Image (cartoon, rainbow, N blue to C red):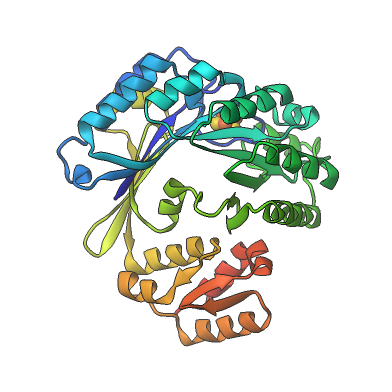
Length: 380
Ligand code: SF4
């Protein structure tokens, strides 16, 4: 069972916090789509097409900048190359691109889950983020998802913005809940170097929100959403039961996936190791050289590295990690030092063992990154 990710690297404008690979110039769209087809076709009749594809994710960038013939071209190539049996086909949409006709068009192409980049309903925050959409456009897009009975959707919110109060965040959450979302991803604002935000922070023009305040935002997100029956299943992801994201969950459990487009990653299991590779984040290079020379990095991951990665990803989820799975699939067992540490953290109520699964408590999830580093540093 494999997943496919397609990176569409075009955006209307650069959001201030974003460090994904994208361009705001649109001229290269057609040559990019040709190179993308070529890259996908290069997998035809290889070992990578031997298993059915169970999830497809169109991300970016902004896939909703593509029109019907561009999108149907991509799906046609995917159909030609892979055995598509998807249980989930997600497409990222920006609110300012959404119309009833657009939703019906992507639905007819097989998209059954819309991922809407809302981020906030406050104009001042949207403007601070340099988003291309307004509050009204976000409300209208969500209303259309409801009206058109789109099969499923998720919305992204960002908290921890400078100047964002708890009241503002609560208002955003309550506003979003009005649309009965099956799934919400809530991320704390991260200051990445080389972004517009990163530069403003470096110049001292913006002071990032302090950690305590961000933690209070995180608490509020957890409380408001769980009160509404939208439960946390990963540090940044919340859903109604049964509406967890299939595609992203597959990343966390090391399922095979292929990524297409500049900057896309792929992961594939071999005999006693796995391979991860990444396309160069450079559209010109991609157009000129794909598919032969698009790969920039190739990593061979041994079982120990994979087990540690699985622990790191698994402990970010509410399900946790199965000790049996670690043993069977990765030939991994916790060291004595790690077992002692687990016992100590259980006493501190940061984690617990339940039905053979090691999982973090809500308090532990808040500091999951610290706990994971601490645990892994005690390996043999
Ligand atoms: S629309 Fe998305 S990918 Fe494009 S700049 Fe904004 S956050 Fe980044």
